[in-house]
Length: 84
Image (cartoon, rainbow, N blue to C red; front, side, top):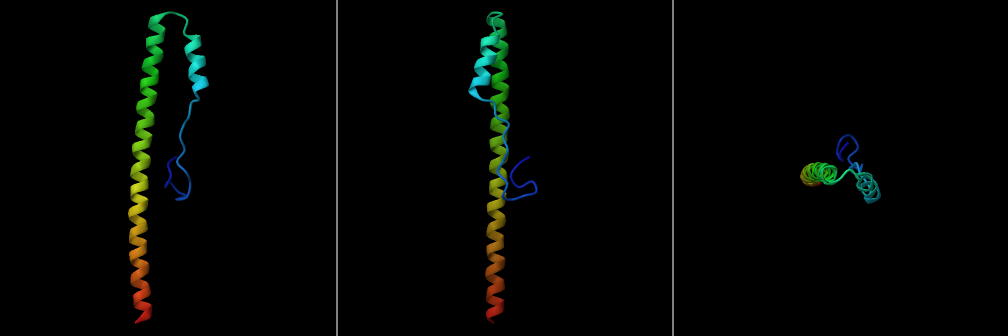
């Protein structure tokens, strides 16, 4: 599901809802303020989910960067050893 799960070059996948989808859901909430409060609570939960996905993607990117650094060090050592 995340970049780094299998294919390192795969972009992170995010479950996206368009603003149009939210607008449709808002339009469907004609049962008054209580229904609208429920919708707002759902949106807050969705925001937290997305923030969690961003944090996880950042961790994955940091790990990939660290591994790239290690790879470069190993390549440099291998090149030095070949030259000797």
